Image (cartoon, rainbow, N blue to C red; front, side, top):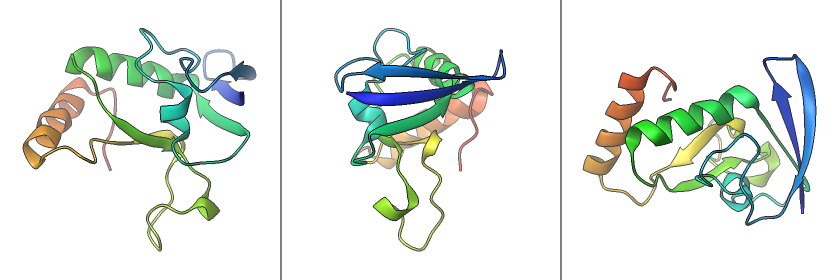
Amino acid sequence: MAKIIVYNNSTDRMETYYRGESEAMPYNTNRTLLVREFRGASNSPTLWTTKNTMLSWNSQRYLYGATIPVGYAFRRPWEGGHGSQSQHYAGTAFDVGQKWTNAQRAVLRSSALNSRFMELC
């Protein structure tokens, strides 16, 4: 069971949820992002994100119209990641499409850029 802290941008308050690994993340629609996908390889008992991040995921996933594989969206800096590069997986950026072809990633990138819901690094 994960403790999930969500900053609600609408109310300027923190919200706490408890979810199992196979349950959907808070504010997630149609079970398109499960806790285990969000967590990835992190062993943290507490995960965090923002309501706006979840709403952006919902919108982008809807516009893309197909499954988007998530490697992880949460990882603490000491848990590894991109080695000496930035650690940006603090619950507001998703590592997606790692096993996709360049063509598949290009379609997702175009969808994201056209949607204006997300910014890609």
